[in-house]
Structures are given as C-alpha cells and as structure tokens.
Image (cartoon, rainbow, N blue to C red):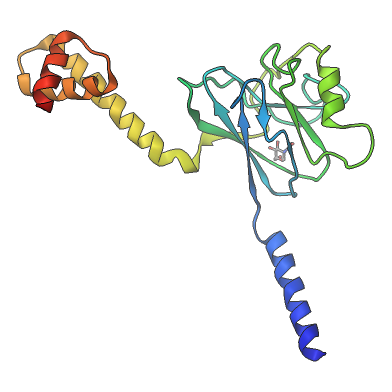
Length: 219
Ligand SMILES: *[C@@H]1O[C@H](CO)[C@@H](O)[C@H](O)[C@H]1NC(C)=O
C-alpha cells in the first residue's frame, strides 16, 4: 500500500513538472499548401511560443483578429508579422515568434488581400463549447474584407533555429556563384574561371565559356 502511494505521488510530481517545466514552441506553417496555416488549430499553454514558418513562393503574413471581426486586426493587443515573401519554394529563413499570454482563444489570419476570405485563418485554444469555432470564423471571413495592421508588432521576427545549417549551405553556394560571375568579364584567370564554371554548371545555367570550363573541371 505504502509503495503504491509513493509511486503514484512520484508520477503526479513528474507530470506536473513536465507540464510546467518549459514553454513549448508550437510550429505553424504559413502557406505550405495554398491559402493555409498548418496546423490551423492548436492548443497552447501560457508561456508557449507560436512560431510561424513562412513557405514560398506566395507572400503571406499573420495577424491576430477578434472572432467578431474576421480578417481585421484585433481591437486590443495582438500581433502582426508584416508581409513575408520567400525567394522560391522553400521556407523563409526568418520565423515570427509570438508568446502566448493566456489560454483564451486567439484567432489569426493572413493579412494579404483575399487570403483570409479564401480561408487562410487559424485559432489557438478554441473554446470547446459554444459557437465561436474556426469553421464559423472561416464562413464569416468569406464575405469580409481583409485589412492588415499598419505596423509589425506583438512578436519577434528572427532566424529559425532549426534551419541555420541549411541556410549556411545555401548562402555559401550563392556567394561562390556571384563572385565567379563578377570575375569572368574581367577575364584573364582561367583557374578562377574554371572553378566558377564548375559551380554554375552544377546549377544548370551559365554562359558557354563557363560551361566549357565546367567540362574541363569534370573530365
Ligand atoms: C504577449 O505579451 C507580449 C509582451 O507584452 C506581447 O508582445 C505579445 O504580443 C502578447 N501575445 C499575444 C498573443 O497577444
């Protein structure tokens, strides 16, 4: 009996430690497949961080709104990321982080005209009863007119921790290509031209001289 009690208490202590130990980061993809937030409904604790990841190539934003006024800025507080466009199909190197300060529902939408009307909205901590559902919000959004807040506020735009190594690799590649193409018109140095040609050849686009150098470098 005593042993059972102690074990139960230990489990309860562990559980409460786990739930209060550290704030969770909740990742939400923005525009990964059309006009979507994914996931578009999340549960968060006070202190958790909403981390919005912007996916290319269409620019998007995220702003908080009130349930009663879909696709429009929240009347009090809230947040706005500003419009973020990515260079290609990948993810932008910056993410927008918003701290959750309560467990009340937070509705959010994309502030690019037409996107919220098209269903680009989501909710944090939806109420489990009542009529203020994400579905009801999206239905009302269809006949709304999207208005974005005037300024970025309520969150922090910064580098995504988990994409830093990927970012470094792609930045290095871009740097090499740029410097070699700058050198080519200057001419003269065939060794540098060859190295640049090899790098460009790998990416599939280049002038004929660089391609020639690439063939040499490969064979
Ligand atoms: C939580 O509080 C911080 C600091 O005041 C604020 O920047 C942030 O926007 C708030 N979060 C929400 C969801 O309003």
